Amino acid sequence: MDKAETLAWLRRISGDLATATTRRLEESLPWYAEMPPARRSAVGLVAQAGITSFIQWYDDPASTPWIASDIFAAAPRELLRSVSLTQTLQLIRVTVEVTEERVTGKGEHLREAILLYSREVAFAAADVYARAAEARGLWDARLEALVVDSILTGEADEELPSRIAALGWHGHGEVAVLVGTTRPMFDVDQLRRTARKLGVDVLIGVQGSRLVTVLGRAEAPGRAEDVPADLPFPEIARRLEPSFGPGFLVLGPAVSALVDASQSARAALAGFAVARAWRNAPRPVEADDLLPERALAGDPLAKQTLVERIYRPLHTHSTDLVTTLWSYLDNGRSLEATARELFVHPNTVRYRLKRVSEAIGWDATGPREALILQTALILGSVGTDATRRRSSPGRRASSA
Image (tube, rainbow, N blue to C red; front, side, top):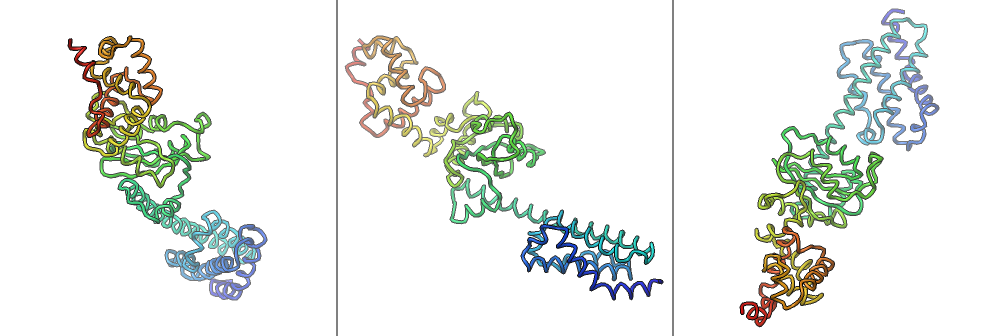
C-alpha cells in the first residue's frame, strides 16, 4: 500500500486499536485493573489520543513536537499525580505492542514509523514528568522555607502541622534545631542523605549566610546499619558538622515534638549570636552551654533557664548547698578558703559540692560550669531576700 492507502486504513482501524489496547491493559497491567473507573477511562483517553496522534504524525512527521505533547494534555491533572512515570512507560509499551501486532505485514516502513514515534512519545512523557517534578520541587522548597521561618519566629498557626505533613516529614518524638553557616557550594541533597543515614529527618532553611536545620528522629529505611536507633542529638550534630560552613555551630535543646521546635530554635539562635564570646567554644556547641553569654546579652529564655534549672532547685533542696556554692565560687574555687569561711572541714565542702552536682547536673569544680553556676546564682538572687547569701558573722570572722 502507498502512504495514502495506509493512512486511510489506519483511520479505519483506530477505534479497534483503542479497544484492543484497553483490553490488553486490563490483562497485563494489574495497577490499571485496580484503578477506579474514572481514572481507567482517563488512561484509555491517553492511549486513544496516542493512536490518533500517531496517525497524524505519520501523515506529517514535522508535527512531532506539538502532537506528542497533546497526548498527555488529554488526561486530567489528577492523573499525573496518580500514575507514575514507570506506569506511563508501561502504557506506551502496551500501546506500541498492540499497534505493531495489528500492522504486521503492512510494510517495514510502517513498523519503523511506529518505533520512531514511540521514542518521541517516551521523551514527551519524560518531559511532562520532569516538569511536574521540578514544579513540585520548587513548591516544596518554598513550603519548607515557610515552615522553617515559622519555627524560627515562633509564629506557628493551625496550618503548620498540615504544611509539615505535606513536606513528607517522617520525624517522630524529639526534635532539635541546629544553626550554623552556609558553605559556599552548599549541597542540600548531600545533607539530606547524611541525615537519612543517621536515622533523622531534616528540614533545611538557608537564610543568606546562615543555615538552619530542624532535626527529628525518624524510622527511615536509609539509616546506616552501624548507627544506633537513638543517636544523641549532639552526636548527630557532630556528624553533620562537615555540611556546614566555617564558624560557630550551635545545637538547641531537644523538645518533645516538631510543633514545639520554636523553643529549641530560639535557644540555638541566641547561642549562635553570642558564641564568639566563648573563646574556646567547641564545634558544635550546645546552646545550654552558652547560657551565661546569652543571659549577659539579655536573652530572657537563658535567664529563665538558669534560674529554674539551677538556682531554684538548689534553693529548694538546701540553703546550705546555696551558701556553700556561693562561698566556693567567691573564693576562687578554693576548698580551704571556703572551709575557713564556713567554719567546716574541707571534706564537708567536697561533700556539699558533690550534692550540688547530683542535684542539678553541673559540677562547680570545672571552670566553665562554675561560670554557669555563678551566673545562675546572681540571676536567681537579684531582687530577692537571697541577696544575703552568706551570714555576716561568718564574713566578719573570716576578716578577723
